[in-house]
Structures are given as structure tokens and as C-alpha cells.
Amino acid sequence: MSKQSPLEKPAAASRAVKWTLGYFSRLPVERKTTLILGLMGAVTAIGWADYISGIQMSFVVFYVVPVGVAVITLGRTGGVIMACASVGIRFLADSTDYADGWLETWLWWNSAGSLLVYLAIVWMLDALSNFQKQLEYRVQVRTAELEQEVQKRQAAQRDLLELSANERAAMGHELHDQLGQHLVGTALAAQVLAHKLQTRDPVAGREARQIADLVEQGIAQTRQLAHGMMMTSIEPSRFDTELDELCASLKQQYPRVHCHSHVEVSPLLRDPMMTAQLFRIAQEALRNAMRHSRATDVWLSVADLRPGLRLSVEDNGRGLPPPCERHGMGLRIMQHRAERLGAEFSIIEREGGGTCVTCIVSSGSLDFFSHAKHEDADFSR
Image (cartoon, rainbow, N blue to C red; front, top):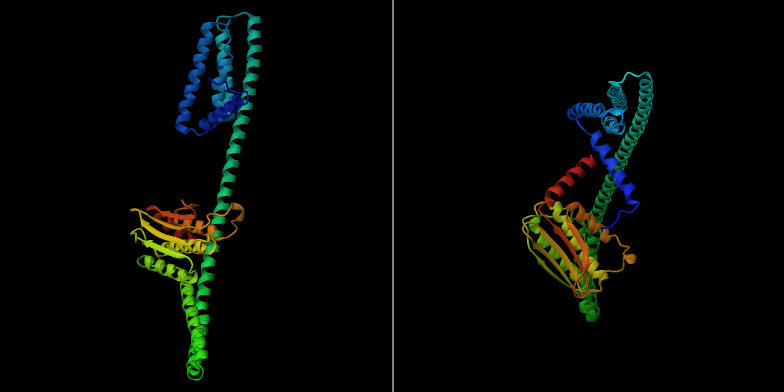
């Protein structure tokens, strides 16, 4: 058996004192009344034992227990009353059957000394109890302040994410309404030029036609980009379609990377905003994989877990960069979106090389997300 170190003994004693002070200070009034009667009975029992043993045995130490309990439960006044009662009962127990004047003087002297000792104990225990209550109050205040700071930070993150979504939507509208129309006009002009040059210079006509085709491809990419940026909510019935279109658009932007998708529609998805959050996570994970992982294949899958679903994006690229090189905001944004969903989010090394991004949404996440939306609505008012 291992011996307790000298440093562990004071720590154990401190924990015992804190537990005792906390337990007795939180007793309800009914139990305190019962405790008062018990303390009076204990003092009476100690006095009876003191009377039976006679003046030869001292029971001074035994009275300390009810005095200490009285201080903790009833406060300083209760402790003083219990100390006086203990000294009085002890004096009666020792002075009975003795009528000698010198002995009575000696008893008075001992009783006065015992009373001073008890009062000192009352003062120390009362100071310790007040100190413990002050510590508890400070801990509660600091905890409340910390919770407020956390709530403010979460509110700031929600505002930042909402602002980012609004900015993306505004940019999407600008791309669709302004740049898209400008490219359409450019494509028409290139087609007219190609038609005119076709009869005069066939080579120049083919080159003009190629320019028109490139502009039309730019129009398609612009529309896809604008469509993705303007989406703030997605109907759950279109979740698989939107993911397939996302993979198709990314294939055009990154032709060297093969994007494979397998999506199972889950009955858990009933909220358009929740579906949009999952779409954003998949979008960010796919773009990171195609831009930075140097992968040749990327796999997107949505599996119905019944209840719940698992969204995962895997690649066969170079894997996770060292922590010192992870400076982008994409990972933080995906984590924050998953937190808003109440989902489990993880990024790990894939077996065989590469990275695996996983977001698991349980059935309880629906209530969590609904509560979070209600809090956001209250905060925005």
C-alpha cells in the first residue's frame, strides 16, 4: 500500500473542510431545526457523561464538536450560544456534589478559560465559513462573466457568418445580373463577328467561333458560381441534385480531378437552412480537396444512418498539412457550421493517403438546430 505524501494530507483535509462547510451551509430550514435539537441533545449527553465520570476526567474537547457544527449551520450567534450552553452544562456537571469554595473558584476559572477557547473556535470557524462563501460567490460571478463572454463570442461568430452569407448572396446577384449579362452581350457580338468572317476568312471565322465558345463557357461558369453564392436555403428534396450539380461544376473548373458522388436522401433533412449548411460544408471540403490536396480523385458521399446521416468528403491527395501551415478560414468555417447544426465534425488522415472530412448529424441535432435558430431570431430583434 502506498503511503500518503505530506503534501496530499493538507489537500485532503482542505477538501474535507470545504465539503463540510458547503454541505451544512446548504441545509434547508427543516433540517436545521432537527440539527439544533440534535446538538442540544449531544451537549446534554456529553454533560451527562461528564457528570458520571466526575471531575477527574475532562470532557472539554468533546464539547468542541457541537460548537463547531453550530457555527457552520447557524452562524456566529448560534455558535456563541452553543459555546455558552456547553460551558454552563460542563460547569453544572463538575460542580455537583462539590461544595468546597476553593474548588468552585477553580471551576469558575476553568469554565472561563474554556469559554474563551470556544469563542476563539467560533471566530475561526465563522471566518473560514465566510471566506468559503466569498470564494463560492466569486466563482459564480466569474462563471457568469465567462458564460456571457462565450455567448458574446458565439453571437459575434453568428453575425460574421451571417454577414459572410449576405455578402456572398450580394456578390452572386451582381455576378448574375451584371457580369452575366455583359458576357452574354460579348458572346453575341463574337457570334456575329464569326458569322461575318466566315465568308471572308474561314480561319478567322473559326477563331472567332472559338472565342464565342469560350465566352459561353464563362457564362455557364458564372451562372453556376452565382447560383451557389445566392443559395441561403435548399429544399431537402433538392439536396442530392444540388450536390450532383456542385460536383459537375467543379469538374469543369478542375478537369484533372475526378469527382465521384453517392448521395442517399435522408428523412432527417426537413429544414431548408439545415440542408444549406450541410451543402456549404460539402462545398468547402470539395473545393479545398481540389485546390490544395493535389488529388486525382475526390469522393463525396451522404449516407443515411437511420436515424441521422453522415456526410463525408475523401481525397487521395497529400494529406493534412502540419498545424503550423493551417492558416485558412475554410476549416474554421466548416467547424462553425457543424457546431450550429449540433453535428460531429472531424478531419483525419485517410487510409491509403489523403484526407477524410466527416460531418455526422444525429436525430437530436434537429432540436439543437431549431433552438439555435430561435436564439438567433431573438438576438437579431
